[in-house]
Length: 250
Image 1 (cartoon, one colour):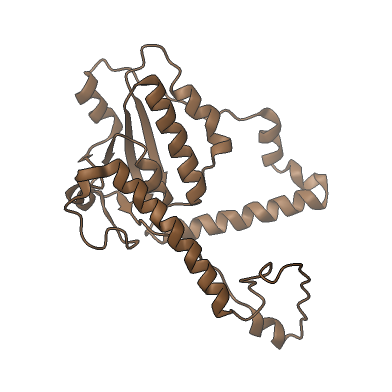
Image 2 (cartoon, helix red, strand yellow):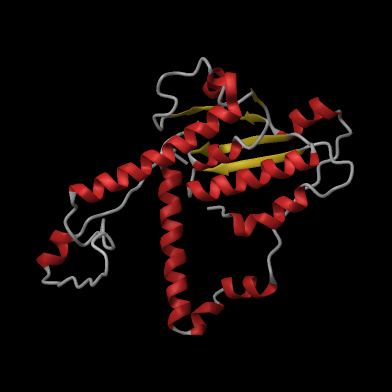
């Protein structure tokens, strides 16, 4: 998933060319951190205002949840008729293992300073007060998400269905009917229609350091336990991302 740390320099480069007419944002994300989506969208809007250029978002397979938050950084949003858009909600998912560890005689030892430090521990029975705290936090983030969509889409979502902010998602074609997107089209076709057939599009690719590339080819496993931990973390992250994509049938 995207984060502002890895994308900041890339965003800055997108707004640097001379005689810049517009910035095209290609979005293909099923979601992620609400904070990171907000930070990236905020950086894009700040530069768009500073440079006084429009931003056009183009949805590929999916712009859902945090992906749609990011797409809303565009002044106009375009999608394929079969794209998936929406999912304006907040989710927290996990597992509980208290019965499993009890069955195998595993003793869970957690020591904290602060009565709420270990809330929602998957190895302890779920408590109502913990769930209430989580739901309150989710409600606050959901309101921020809804406010941003209302701010960016304005009157275009006036005829949207009652469940617009329920976490439901739709195809790009249906999203266009609701005002979630402004039209059906791809980046090449839309930009040619707006700026002529001679429009020049400069791709802003991610720059990867040589050291980072070498480490990601397996070198970290030679760095000892921390390297193995990193491999495990990346494997878990990959599984989590795969589950998020699978939610949308992709």
